[in-house]
Image 1: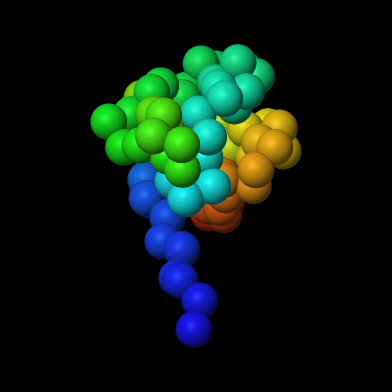
Image 2: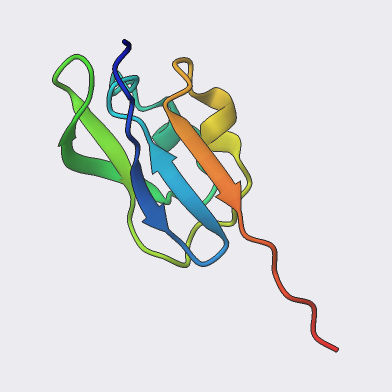
Length: 87
């Protein structure tokens, strides 16, 4: 039976950010490409013993998914939160 890979999850204002430490090698591409500078290094270590990333706060992320798209190891999942429309 295979190992279950658990993400570290951060609920944000516009999205739910998931990082999978078992896939993250700490390359920093996601940090480099984030248009709002949302991602910072965390205390959690990734697959090679290098730091993983985490969002710096709850409201800076615009849920653009660029971090997810540029991650070469599929270590990031961004789930957009549907905003309720004003009547």
